[in-house]
Length: 461
Image (cartoon, rainbow, N blue to C red):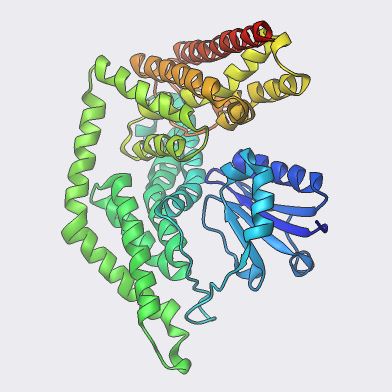
């Protein structure tokens, strides 16, 4: 096969782990096959290793390994192959082969060029994750600033004019107030591009003001996005007036429709659901708390950054807006254990792992400390029938212990580094013990399973 020039883009919801790990995997796989490749990563700090117009012009095909919506206008006329960051990371060789054989030229531009509106068939999960990816920096910043306000005392912010009050105004009064509007706005943006942003933001603000919470924000985002998309496709204007669609007609009508539906139809029932959920979570006994922790912990370790993991994570993050912090603590603690556990397993069972796996174990341990579950993916991809179950057990134990001690976490990311911020998390010593317990269960459990398997292999030979 002739060597090809390939360009690629990787992007995941958090823009931390899958984005960069999948980029490295694609680069390694493509170069091993004799192809040249340049990968642009669209992570949490923006686009890096950006593709130039010359890179794209010379490319034979484009690989989009993305879990969120990204602008593909620059690739117009090029053969494009779409996949997820998970596939790019775990099945990079197959992705390269499939891209070569299956990439097609996409025709995505519709309506008018002035609006930049594009029609792309993407799933609800991708739209939701796009909203979550834009929301996360707001929540992380807000949560940590709220935690900083607690340095001066848990109720110090109630005294007007103090630094604690200013920090609470920034974190709680402003950053957290933007959380749901940003979530809804960028869900709508993912669906309908720029015409969906204004109605999505307004719908999210309404969801927040009427008490519909993050569930209402999700509903508002999809409602606004599909309303704007419908209007963009159905409204036809003379060429001289076409430019009014994205800046006047679509925002006006979609915002009006979204707002009225949220106020008179959707908002009330969703607010009632959120109130019931909040009351259940705040008033649940220890048995219910442990059960919820078990479920969230197991979900975080099931697919290591995949849809199930992200569903549990989004649930924890969404509840921060209602000042329900315990599920977020359970989610982060459980999410740290698979990668830490793999590091422990390679340390305990040195003779059962290759030198490459030992290096991967060291990296996995560090990534786990940073709350990057994806560090365990190389082990899960190679040995899923042993790694995934033992990781789920360890994560479930940690999640249950975190809920049992009623640990509360104000920031939705950061791993071990959050522990050094006063009052960012409660019951720090017990929380660390919960993480250690789950990590040891995962690490020792996998070491024993690996040792048993290797012993059987030797006996068989």
